[in-house]
Amino acid sequence: MTMRDDQTRLLHIRDHVAEAVALAEGKTRADLETDRLLNLSLVRLLEIVGQSAARVSEETQRAHPQIPWRDIAGLRDRLLHGYDTVDLDILWHIVHDDLPPLVERIQKAATGGIV
Image (spheres, rainbow, N blue to C red):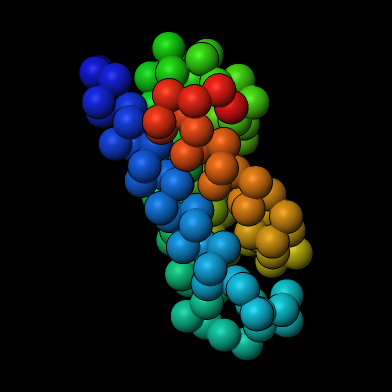
């Protein structure tokens, strides 16, 4: 795997995280119950983020320990394999509280900055 592959994956993560944050903007936790497209979109975006994170090389992951790589990849597994038991409170917390600061961290990692 090349650093270019990692950079591409980091940019995919950044873009999908930013899209999830933008989709949730102006929405409430209750919207996850009633807006099926919002729910499905957020879940799918986070699955992609998790899959991309799992494919980032160990070298790049070690270089950016402030990014919770294992948690991100684990979320993907949980969403994919536990699709019928997704806790919407946890999903909302992740999208609303955890993702916004992740965008900047991933951007810095993608551009070689210090995270």
